[in-house]
Length: 79
Picture 1 (cartoon, helix red, strand yellow):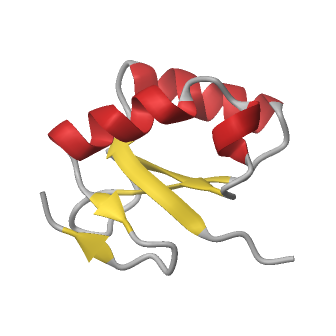
Picture 2 (cartoon, one colour):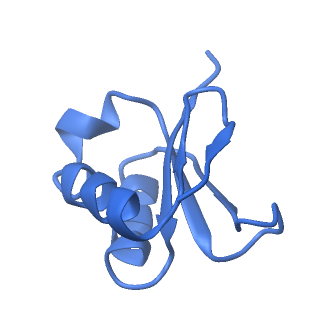
């Protein structure tokens, strides 16, 4: 099954902790930056994580305020 990209946000603070929790729960976490290089932004896959990982919703809110959000297909909505 192919997982879809859900969000992007800063890899510092809440993003780093969310990525750790997702990886611990078996989710694949992709990274990229605004330029597309692998760094600053954690991209979280699989919508089911929204209910199983408590940090997903706060992370989404923070990403909307401070970063770019990604559509399910991975296209970037600039902040």
